[in-house]
Image (cartoon, rainbow, N blue to C red; front, side, top):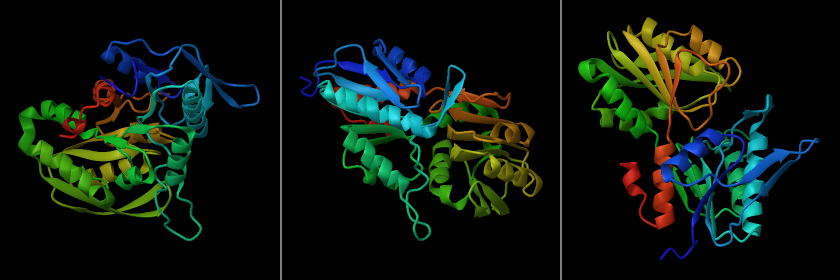
Length: 326
């Protein structure tokens, strides 16, 4: 018997309703009936239009900027919607509330890099916990140590297996001529694990970051000449680092072509223009963040609704989620 809740219900905020609908289709249940919006002065509100007493409730909300009714809302709006929904559900006597955060914003400030810096990731973790979340389900945190910022269970799903399946099919005929490349030294562990799953060699782009959202490529560690290159990252924000790395791989390294993949397509500012003008053949994202406008012919998305649905099923049935990390 499931002790924590009599049934399972999934609700969503406004940041990524399409993913929430996909999760519900995979689970074979309807999306919860709710309304989340803002008053004329910008204050967010949430209304739950069905009973959740004793239910095991999952709230799907990426903490990213989003568009609704022609208006662009910020990361802060998405975060407030999540917090308000959690509070509403707890006050409605939900049996358990799981915050499903496909993209966890504010994750880049996970430590103090200079005096008087905030640790925003810890602050957001505290807010989610204090709002009443019983556990968190997310994907590819920018830094793994963020799991330790929470005093509640955190399941950090990995997007790499989705990319592995895609690239094994794409490069089946030229597997020996393909390499995985880490865009910086900080992503080496992620890239190494990815390369091992693909059974491919790995190289590293060594760069020096001068300031936020800008970088200078220094050199390439490894031989990528005449290779099909897969650039792996956890997120793409303005696209500067990714496009610079791709250009260096082509011009300095002599790569045959470069394809990039990242779990989270933040794509702020000039990102889409930079990708369009870059040497990249293709950039593949997971749909943890909804499609950005304007779109690009070089950008495509792979859904992770099935992965989150499977994780939600394991959590509801109180069985191990470890098989999802293999």
